[in-house]
Amino acid sequence: MLNFLPGLSLINVIDILLVSFIIFWLLLLIRNTRAEQLVRGLLVLLGAGLVSRWLGLYTITFILDSIQTMVLVAIPVVFQPELRRALEQLGRGRFFRPAVFFQEEEGERALAEIVRAVDDLSRRCIGALLVIQGRTGLEEVAETGVRIEGRVSGELLLSIFLPRSPLHDGAVLLQDGRVVAAGCLLPLTEQRLSNELGTRHRAALGITEVSDAVAVVVSEETGAISLAREGRLVRGLRADELRKELRRKEKPGARFWIRWRDGR
Image (tube, rainbow, N blue to C red; front, side, top):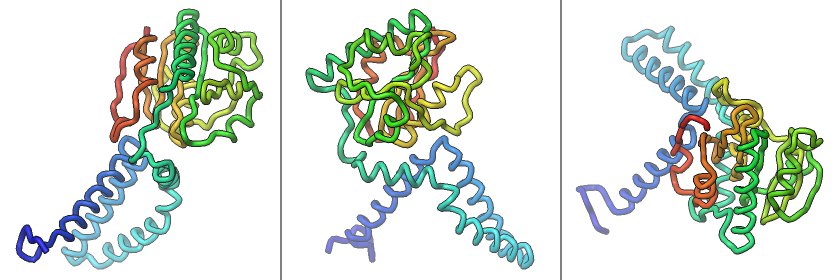
């Protein structure tokens, strides 16, 4: 067995690298979420416990040890959203297979129709919310709306989001070049957002936090185009930039590439 250092074998090095990767992945998973503050709180408690034990403060040490025990029991409940997202990512092979939403000829046609409709909605300042399904099934979302099962076209999307349309306020679910359903209800994110962002943006972030879908939002107030992916929002996109974002494959750490810009 090859030794890099005395007493350190190749297996030990691989073991250390695997543990480091897992820790790094967990840090990426909770970065810029509520869980990040919770982890900091846990580290403060752990550090306070070590200091109190070193100083011989037995009563404080006992109290802190009791709190740490309760926190360990509560971790599965407190971190439920993050644990769910981690298991979903493992289940759909996020780290081994990139998600490509538009690559075939029909996908390119659907992409062109979506971008054309979103650009038109943006110029008219008509609010819209489109969800493009990835590998994670969203049948429960489709069941909350009205089934369409029609071929994606700019005219169809425009007619759905016209202000007097009964499906205007809901989300449109798209999959494989089809409009699966309209008027769908989405889970809302619990992130703290700017007052400029409304329910559509919260819903867009919410659905991308629990699935690998991509959501496109058109602001009713400003007409600004935003795109949500992996619980992160890119604002102030132009039509050509939206096309590039929708074509982009997922990359490790891509969820943290955030561009905040002024809307049009």
